[in-house]
Image (cartoon, rainbow, N blue to C red; front, side):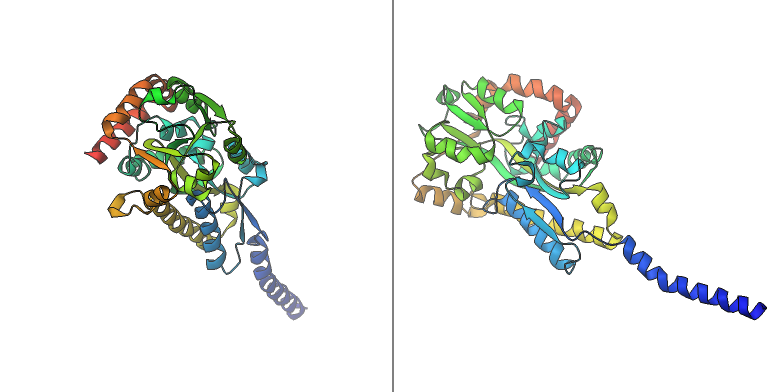
Length: 346
């Protein structure tokens, strides 16, 4: 009898041992597809970074983590301002955001939109690579999402169909499209323009019909979407705000991965973000590379590059907006950002 009981215990233990791998596999079973949302499409660095991240994760995981990009914010009907909410609802798994599009929900992200705060890539890098960038990531983490890398879509420049913009008076009366955020409406109102909010999907037809006179976007986007063919004959490089990018995924999705796969997802995001930043800065004069500026000239676009003194005239005209939104962002955070930018540009 004792030997029979012993055999039964042994058989049960063996069965448990055989079942254990199946239990472990069930616990680490992944979705057949992970949805990644991004505004725009692959002709611009922000979207290209999203595609690159998806490719790297899918390839390096051997297809175990299959990430598919849904460009044009199609998972939220083209309204990029709804992507963060959709992530928290489980509609979107991965995303590459512009901080502009989430600033209505997360006020601290308006830091990148304070007019003429960052000024150039040195100021931008001082923010994303320092304590302030880490602090902004912690703010995002409190919203049930996990940021894993800072990216960049470039400084936002202004174009129009009428004339070169060199002083605030040149903007008076112009209809200028902006994507989202009350701060942009107030910036252009302070400059005497008529701001018009619309999605990116509506921008191109609005330019072609003359419903708006101009728009503000990075040079790489201007070139990629051939805005010179939409009557945009004048472009001013003024670096008034930066278009920061964030690579992120939902916390539940990240937690569902093994530690090794979590590290893989993060590493791939870092690589894609570095490539994205390099693409956003390409051809704008750094290190002697003027290929983007030369392409604008080839397309007969008149490019006006403002001096620091000329930028200050715009900064003075929008100072009341800056001060107002510094309160929204947080005066201490803005003060520390100003100090970091000043030190980086010294």
